[in-house]
Length: 193
Picture (cartoon, one colour):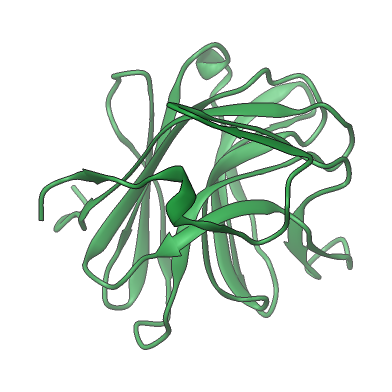
C-alpha cells in the first residue's frame, strides 16, 4: 500500500477545538482545559481532547507531522487512536515540568503513561507514526528528518473498529495553537527493528 495523504476534511473531531483553519496545513487552537486521561493515579476523567479522526484498520499505519510553541504546562499534540471512551491511545509530545516529553498514554479502562525527555526537539517539526498490527499498536516518532525512535508497543483489540488522526490538548491555558503539516496513511510497519 503506497503512502497517501488524508484530507483535513476527511476526519471528524472528537471535541470541537477553539478554532480551526484548514488549508494546506491544519492550524488548530485548543480549548483551555482540554485533555485525555482516565482515572489512574490522578483519579480524574478527561475526555475533552481535540482529535481529528479517520478509520485505521488492522494492517495500516498513520502519520501526523506538526510544530507547536511548547510553553504551557501540559501542552500536548500528536496522534490519537480511539475505539471508544474507555479504549484509546494518545502518542506524541507533552511539555511538562519544563521539559519536552515524548511518550504515550494507553487506556483500557484506566490510563497509563510512558515518557522520556526530548528537549533537543523543542524547535523541530515532529512526526508520530502508529502502525496497527493484529494485536498491537506500534508507535514511532522522529524530529525533522532524523532517525525513527520506537516509543511504544501497546496491546490493542484487533476485532474493534478504530479511528486515528492528529490531536492536541491544552489542560492549563488558552491560546495553544498547533500547526499540523501532514496527515498520511500507508501499510503498517512489518518489523519492530
